[in-house]
Length: 211
Image (cartoon, rainbow, N blue to C red; front, side, top):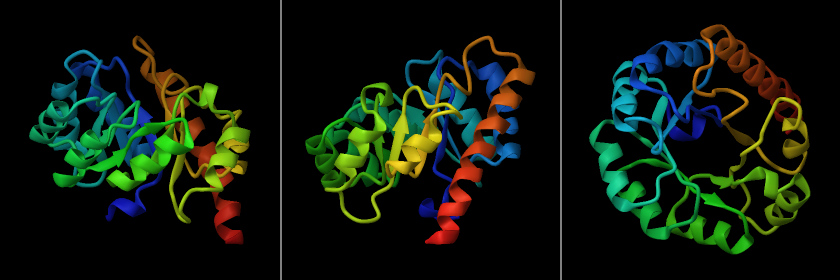
């Protein structure tokens, strides 16, 4: 599977611990998720990323979020991570990740940051936090981006506001608190995972058919 063909829905497992990552990872993979992120400020994130990459890395893009340094890029690559998601736009971090073949989704919130990220090689743009970047703002910024730019909203995204962001030009999302929170039961996590991906697919299909 090429990177461009991954379903642009990033499952963000902030706070996950190694002992639960494989069982929850299996739920995500079975539900159809193809991008899984373990933020670097989670407990022992590299251990979780390594376990997920070994188990699901052949078919799913596994990696880290909250990546803020070139050194972290090296650490993530060393354990098999191939996805780099950042909260900010740092050209050095983006270039370092692209040099080792990672899929890069840096965070931005202004036109300047968005264009800097793309110039550095970003594969997709993460408008974060979405609470501070409402659909109207993303729609306006999207008009100056190169055609075909994958724009994703991250931060406060739920099944209830996906449609508004998609109408503004978002074609992908990062799902955090609406998907996973530390201590969540397996049943609740499974429900969240299935509800969110079904909502995304139901909104995406008509637009794809009209293209």
